[in-house]
Picture 1 (cartoon, rainbow, N blue to C red):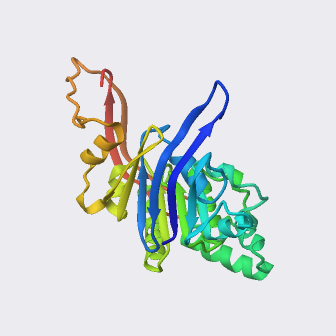
Picture 2: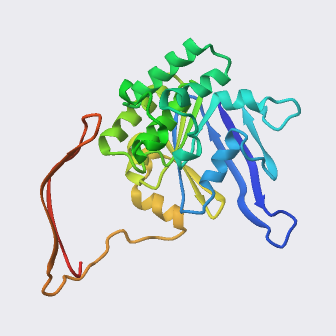
Picture 3: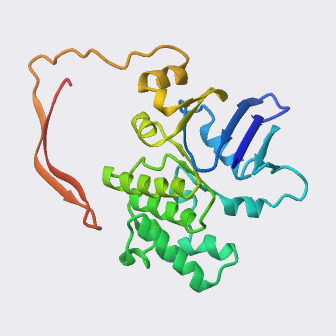
Length: 287
């Protein structure tokens, strides 16, 4: 068993007039060798919960066990915990800071005590896994596209070879091809006995890659369900607390005027990936 969350609460502004529960009585188990999806509406506490799992935030009450040991016990090494539990933030620029891509990805392994040579080998391997070749190594991470920044941030965590990998909205700005490459990496980690946790609003992704799905609503734990028995409708209902109609009836625009025409548009990324391939469509006023 990798991580066990027990009756966890986190209160912002505790003992003030602004006191507000971000998490309330959350129980969750993350097992070795499994892929867990963590879902919930914006503001449901997903990101707050994941920042507890590697000790970035301290619980107001409750406990978190890593391999059976409380991370809040006296003398527990948070530095060692963060070497084993890797977190990729929702916004990659929050964890990019070095002068170039290779140096940035080397930071984690060097902080683990590896030599420069060992750290570079880890960094090169992680960057290759995320689809970034040597042409990116000396570029500033702040000059990259949103998707490239995200892949550098993911590589920085992968280079530390964590036992648990937590990713907060990792596919938000990735192309479908980049997303599939990332999921292939995560599937390999799972096959190696590692645990993977992904926060996403894309329910089809959760259903396609996870073993179980945990649902939060307004800071409270709702349930954890087996993915094989879940549907987008059932997950949505648990997220909002009531049945949701996913099909929307739209009226047909009257006498629409074409505002935009796209014809046979193709785009390739700097790495040579087909981002758009022969796309054509029209956009009309009133729709």
